[in-house]
Length: 170
Image (cartoon, rainbow, N blue to C red; front, side, top):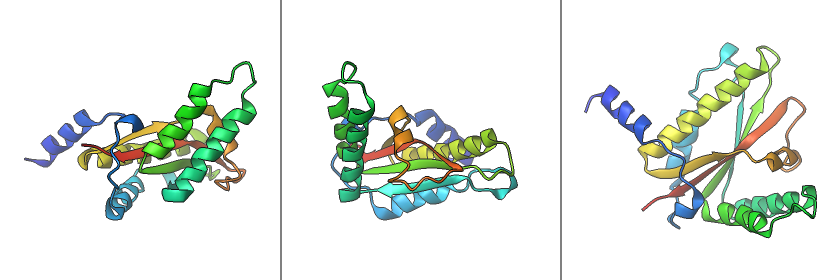
């Protein structure tokens, strides 16, 4: 198959696939490395490379899930709190084999929107690489990620744009 045909097929197949559809099979580390290597090939003005990714697996991933649940509980008024939403936060984290935080760093060299666009293109590269490897993935950007500043060590010139969930498929 020629490259353009393969690329078109991968783009057509790209979907957000949610943790409920992931299997327990572990994603090999070399594939996680490839996903991140392809992400950082995204175009960016003035070579600012504004993306900052942190990989969460195993116990560290479970701690992230607990932290997100605690944040949801803390920031949600009691009358709006939904136990199902609280439980879903933990379920999604536990079903994903890998969770990657997506943070943009604003350089001040280019407009902020260009840094966000470059980071988004990096995430698209992650989506396409996952699709090529038959790995389910999706980018979640709930408002509560704004409260992850301490655990992600987010600096003043950075912003968390969400979490990238990944899991093996049948």
